[in-house]
Length: 123
Image 1 (cartoon, rainbow, N blue to C red):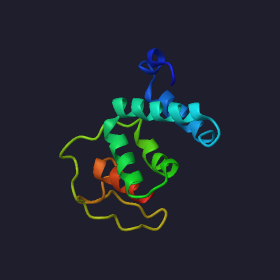
Image 2: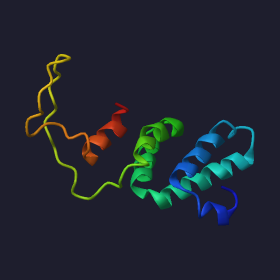
Image 3: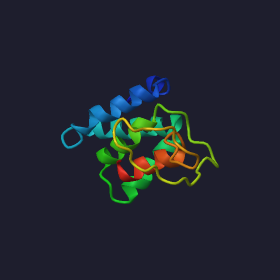
C-alpha cells in the first residue's frame, strides 16, 4: 500500500486485507498507520458507497475496526443504487419447518435498505 504504482492496481479484497493487517501494528509502527490510511483511500476509490457508511459509523463513535467489520461484507456486493431504499414490513418469524413463500411487502434482504440496516445495527 505504500508504493503508489502498486496501490493503484490493488483490488478491493487486497486493499481490505492490507487495512486489516495494519491494525495490529498501528501503535508500534508508523508505516502501519500510513499503510492503513492508504488502504482506506484505495477502498474509497473503489467503493465510495461502502466507505461513506464506514465514515458515518466512525463519526458516530463506532471504533474503526468495528465499523469496518460491519461494512466489510458489502465490499464485494454490487454498489448501492440511488432510489433503492424502500420501506418494507418486517417478516414474522416462522417455526422451523413451517416456512412458506414470503408474501408481498416483506423484508427484502437483497435491497440496500436491508443491507444498510445490517451495517447500522451489526445484525
